[in-house]
Structure formats: C-alpha cells, structure tokens
Image (cartoon, rainbow, N blue to C red; front, side, top):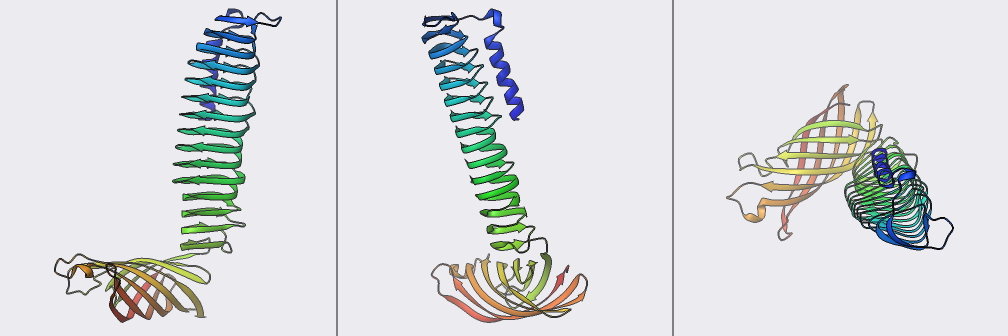
Length: 389
C-alpha cells in the first residue's frame, strides 16, 4: 500500500512540474539572486513553478519547486518540492517533498515525504513517509512510515515498517514490523510482526517475540523470552513467562472438555485449561433452580491448583464465580439474577488416553444482585467425565 501511494503521489508531482524545458510560472516574483528561475524572498501567483526557493512561495492553485526549498511553500491545491524542503509546506489537497523535509508539512488530504525527514506531518486523511521519519505524524485516518522515531497519532490506523522507536496511538489498529523501544495503544488491535520491546495496550495485542508488556482483553505472544501478559485471555509459547488473566495458555497447556452433573447447575459443560501447576475453567450450566422449575442457567469461571498423586490420579482445588439467570415469570424478580461464590476439592482419574472421570466436593454461597443479601448456602457434589488428556 505504501509503495502504491508513493508512486501515485510522485506521478502527480511529475505531471504538475512538467518537463525541464516546459516549466511555467504564472506569478509575480521578486528576485534577488542570479538564477532567474529562483525567486527570493517572495513568489506570489496562480501557478508557482520555480527552480529553487529561498523565502516564500504562495500559489493560488499550486506551488512547486524543482530543487531545494527553504522557507514557506504554500499551494492552494498542490504544494511540492522535488528536492529537500526546509521550513513549512502546506497544500490544500496534497503536499509532497520528494527528498524529505525538516519542519512542518500539512494538508487536508495527504502528505508525502520521500526521504529521511524530521518534524511534523499533519493531515486530515493520510501521511506517508517510505523512509525514516523522526518527529510526529498526525492524521485523521492513517499514518504510514518505514522507520519511525517519534509518535504516530491517527484516527484509525498507524503502520510502521521495519522499526518503531516511540509510540503509535490509534482507535482501530497499530501495526509495526518491530518495536525497539516504545508503546502501541489502540482501542482495537496492536500488532508487532517481530520483536516487541515496550508496551502494548489494547483490546487485542499480538507480538511474534514479546520482550515487554501486553495489557488487554486478549494477548498473544508467539515467543515470550521475557516480559508479562495481563488480560482476560493470555496466549504464549513460553510456559515460564508471567501471565495474569482468567485464561492462560502456553505451549504445554492441556485443553480438556468436561461434562458433568451436580447439585448446583444440574447439567454442565466446560473447558478446562490445565497448566503445569494451575488451571482455569470456563463453562455453562442449565437448570440451576431445579429440573422441575422453568429454565434457569449459569455461566461460571474457576481457577485453582492441581497436584499429581499417582500416574493416573490428580488432586485439584479451586475457587469460582457463577452468574445465574432465570427465565421464570412466576418467581420473585430478585431471584431471577444471582451470583455465587464457591470452593471445591476433587480427584481426577485417567481411565484412558483421552478419557477420565472426576468427583468434586465443595460449598457454594449464592446472593442476590439487587440488594446483595444471601439467597442460600449449600454443599456441592459434582460427578463427570473429562475428554482429551
């Protein structure tokens, strides 16, 4: 995408500049130099087209400089320099500096710099810098740059090529091939294809090699030599890495499917994520208030520790939280929505490679959401099977 935008903007610039022998400059200029095509300190007109600029160029439609420019390059529609721009360049539609810029580049639609640049790019739509950019890119839609040392701030998305040293901030997504030192913040996705050294903060974070922090709803680190993951679901390839979340999955995690009956929710189905020492469970149960009542159900989460007793025997202990709903229209309104805290201990026996049975005993305390008073406290007995080892 960056290459296509690069070629398109250079094509527009070449059309506007024309051939070397066909340049036209419809303007009023004051020239203090020996080069008749160089205007300084002022060039004002409709179509500005000069060889060099050292001062100000104001074009009602366009303002172009074929070589280097220092000062102010302002075009009503297009502003462009074929050489290096030092100063301020503004175009209503597009501003282009082929050999880079040191200063400020601003347009309503798009900015482009073709070489290493320092300063500020600001646009209501898009900024593009296919080489190294040092400073800040500020766009209403998207920023794109190869090497970024600074800040990319966009309404939707930021893209950094081989390396980012600084910060990417966007509402939808941040993408970087590698983050040497920096931060990615997005309401949506943060993606680093290589090494991430810094912080990713967003709904979903992904890094091929994580050497920093991920904080979000879902965190993925394919390789995780050091750092931490904090979120609802944490996925990584290193079993020794630090993870804090409801569900933690690594290369050694065993994912099991559990089906069981109990004195709480009568029929239950759950997924258990079994790590080296700890485990977590997410599940759903039906008929919490009884089989003779209208439909009721529960969503539950549990976390705990497990210990090996023998090659086929395992001891488990956990604590859990359940959200309980009833669709009955005859019950008290307060009883239609409850929460419950529980604790269990149990044993697992592995009957075959992918089949086991378990028994769990515990206690559950349920309370009303509405006024937070006790509903009931009762013992728990659960008996079921585990699929997959």
